[in-house]
Image (cartoon, rainbow over all chains, first blue to last red; front, side, top):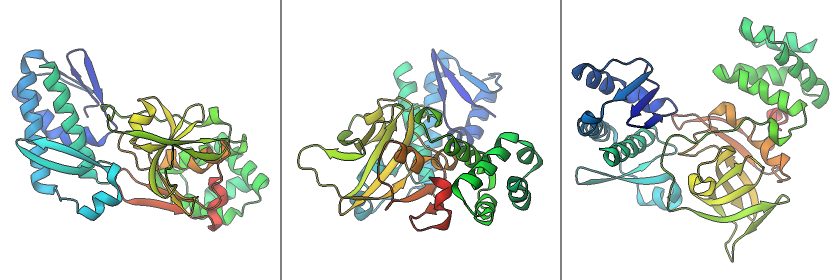
Length: 119
Length: 205
């Protein structure tokens, strides 16, 4: 399994479930671009934009299949549990503490922003 | 030795039963707290893959719940929240809030490595990314602390970490006698609850 991503000088590690979800996307990305990997997957600088697009696709797949808009009551009762995600001109509000979909989505979004900063 | 019987009847694996530290911890705990072996055995059976962390918690309890014994929890690889706030802190076990803030409802909290407890909004803002002893949400009712949980999007304390949270709060002088410990799994489902009146409560303090 992939345990960390190396992006430029950055190393990205996460507590398990992010890479569990992303594994099939990362595998295909690595195979398509002929990148050798083991526990570490290193993304070459010239592939950062492609990598970012792949992450966006993985996030869109997740949200299209699993996203549920929180109710106003949920958001006002637990205001600190939610984070906003902007993806391809659409706004999503995810519970990044208690909902596994929200946890993964928030992490992928953070990763996309990090990759975009580096590319 | 009672510990052999407890661990054996809880159908723990060989590795666990051969761990002399765990055996000693269970035996000491039974003697020191006067806990019923049956209560301990039942709890162990329900802990699935977290038995090892639970028994380490008993070891810490036997050693007096000193702050530097508790495991530190690292923040996940995420950016710090910018929209948080610190609304209060515990000083000598008493919650001191900023201004006229009313002590009611759910707040976020962190327990820093030095034992300082901050309450407010957003864990990573309050901690600035440093390791913590505990993180999650606290609930107050009529000014009393009534619930402590492990829901943090940046720290994600697992059930094994969370077994110690009552001990951590108590060791800093906070009154947890009215507080339920609510332990959530990584997927967001409840793993276990330890209310003040539960027979098993003694195993978590």
